[in-house]
Image (cartoon, rainbow, N blue to C red; front, side, top):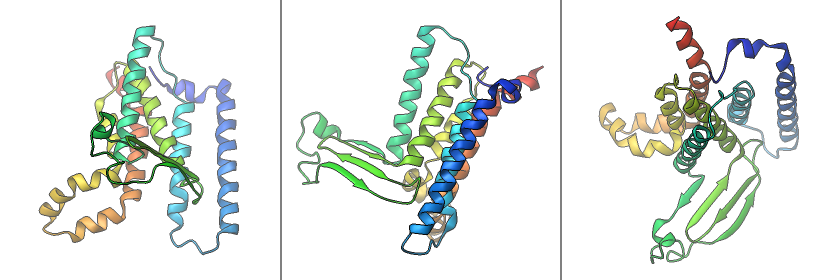
Amino acid sequence: MATSYAGRLDPRHAPRLWWLAALCWVEALAVGAYLSAAPERVESVRYLFYPFVWITVGAAAVLWTDPPQASGRARLVAGVVAGAYFFVLASLAGLVSVDLAALLGGTHGHAATHHSTGWQFSLAAPGWGPRVGYAGEAVSATFVPYRVAGYLALAYLVYAAVLDATKSALSGALGLASCVGCTFPLVGGLIAGAAGGTGVVSALQALSVDISTLVFVAAVALLAFGPPLAERARR
C-alpha cells in the first residue's frame, strides 16, 4: 500500500502537519506581499490562488504517501516510469522542449530559425513565478513553480503507484489530462466539430487553468485515495 488511513491519522505524523501549516503560512505571506506591492489591481483573484492549490495539494499528497517496500530493481523501474511520466507532463505543458533535428545535428533546429539562446528570468505573481528559462539550440526548459511542483508531486505518486500493484491506470491518465492548456490544441478541432462551432472551444480554452486545476486535484485524489478504497471494497 502506498497510503493508508491509519497512517494519515497517526499522531507520529504530526510533523507533517507542521510542515504543511508552515507551507500555507509562507504562501499567505507571499500573497499578502504581492497584493500590497502589485502596481495594478488584480482582476481575477482565483488565478492568484490556483498555483497554491497545486503546490499545497501536491505537497500534502507527497507528505502522506509512503511508497511500499520493494526490491532495488522494482524501485529503479518505478523511478524510470515516474521520470518518464514527469517528462511527458512537462513536455505537454511546454516546460521542456527538445528539437530532435538540432539534437541529431540537423539544419532545422533553433539555430536555423535564429531563436535567441541563453538564460532568461522574469518575475510574476507568486506561484506563477519567478520564472527561469533556458533556450538552447536543441533543448529548451522553463521553470514555472506551481507547474513543476504539481508535476513532481504527480510523478512521486506514480512512483508509489508503480510499486503498488493495486493502482489503477485511470488516475495516471487524469494526471496527463491536467495539462488542459497544452493538450487543448490537439483535441480542439474534434470538440469544435462536435459542438458545431469554435465558440465553445474558445470558451473552454479561456478556462483551461480552471479545468486543469480541477483535473490535477482529481488526479492527486485518485492516486492517493483510490487504492485504499479499492482494497476496502474487496474485503
